[in-house]
Image 1 (cartoon, one colour):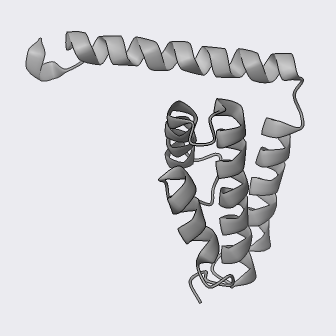
Image 2 (cartoon, rainbow, N blue to C red):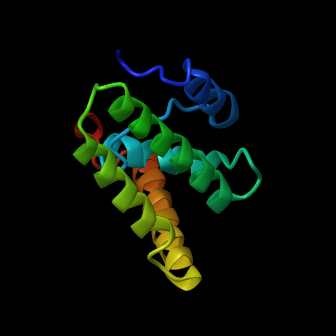
Length: 123
C-alpha cells in the first residue's frame, strides 16, 4: 500500500513542524542528515527536543511502512532498537557529548566549505 496507514497525516505534520519528510531506516545516512538539519534549525526552540520529535515521526513512518506491508517487521524492529539506543540507551551527559561532537563536525565542515577545502574545483 506504500505507507499511508495514517492517511499521510503523520508525514504532513512532520513536514509542517520540522521542514523535513520523515524517513524510515533511522540508521541511514539520509535519515541522520535530516536529523542534523532539524537539530540545527531547532523548530521547537530546543535542539535536542527538536531532533527527538523528528525521530519519533521517523519511527512512525517506519511502523507505517511495516504495517502497510511495504517493509518487513525486521526493518521496523531495527529502527525501534536504533531509536531506543539513541534516546534511552545513553545518559544525558553522553547525549550532550554526542551533540557537541556533531556540532563540532558540522562547524568544521562549514569552515571547510567556506574556504573551499575539499572542493576539487577550487584546489
